[in-house]
Amino acid sequence: QVHLEESGGGLVQAGGSLRLSCAASGRTFSSYVMGWSRQVPGKEREFVARISASGGIISYGDSVKGRFTISRDNAKATVDLEMNSLKPEDTAVYYCSARTTWSRSDDYWGQGTQVTVTS
Image 1: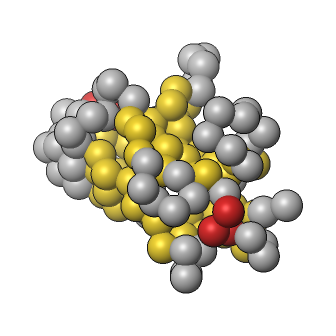
Image 2: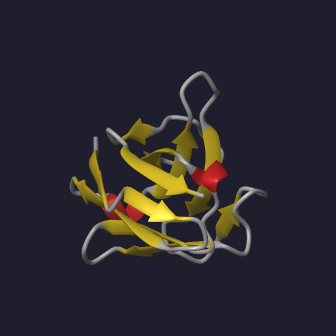
């Protein structure tokens, strides 16, 4: 099992940047596929980005491609999400997740961190 804790959310103007971080506790962080998703009240959770255990495979949701970058540090057991050129529609609660394989939806989730982008 893995415990996840997000940080770095906040209020930013459109066009600005934020960096989210997710700290994981557990013995086998380096074996997990890590990801970020986001959710707006009343809507389904939306996939943002995913990174393989080694960091060699990365995928992004269409709405964030070219603006967001996911990275991980297995030695520190962290996964980050660098968000640039933020838009008001990026406003959401951002959740960190960990799963055992790329396609298996057995995710552990963090509590989430709020990101608000003002126009």
